[in-house]
Length: 280
Image 1 (tube, one colour):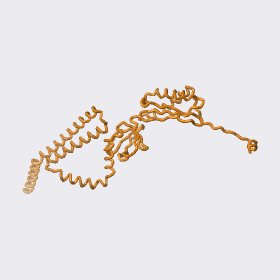
Image 2 (image 1 turned 90 degrees about the vertical axis):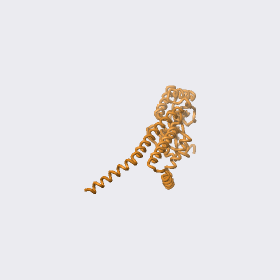
Image 3 (image 1 turned 30 degrees about the horizontal axis):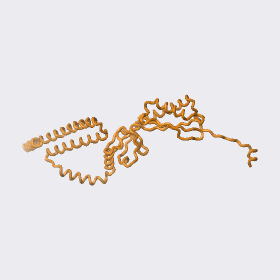
Image 4 (image 1 turned 30 degrees about the vertical axis):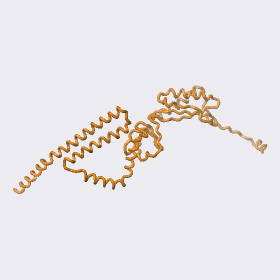
């Protein structure tokens, strides 16, 4: 019984000794970490307000504030480790060796990060722009280091790895998208009147961009019609909604103006047996 009491007393003494020796160090490390996070959040808010006043691109401002947060928090962690007498030199060496060994296994993600940094710095597009890359089209919602997130009119979220963007042909139409239209009128109708009617119809839509303005003109002469082409720019978020409304309005306006819209025609001739014999 006496031995058990002695063992418990030693355990209690050991706990008290460690608490006295390292308690303040742990408390100091926790305080340093808490202060570091508080300063990081405060600095990020301050930088965001400053960048907003300077009207800096949102993609670049997010990248810079993220870097600032990482530096401040990393510095706080280093100070907290120092409270325990831990030096960072061995960790830096181990991290370098691990990074060198893992770089071969994560070449894909690393290339995405490098491409993302290139996009953020060169800014071929920014948040809110409408871009087309290959067969993918949408509005840029967010640019991250690893990927770029688009959204189309249907609300579909499109995630593209940044390595698949850099080096590709990018079509950037800002916040608008061009919409081409084509309608045929008969050869008996006046094409100048048709062009005027279509221009007036397009001018009635407030969603259509004024700069650049709509373009209307004769595109080609088909077998049964004179084809009138028109192009205009509308917001991508309501692209198909505007296209459908414009096409219907153009059709109604041409009918009201007396412009005939023909249908394809074929001339069929019946040849009798007598004519065939005579021709032979």
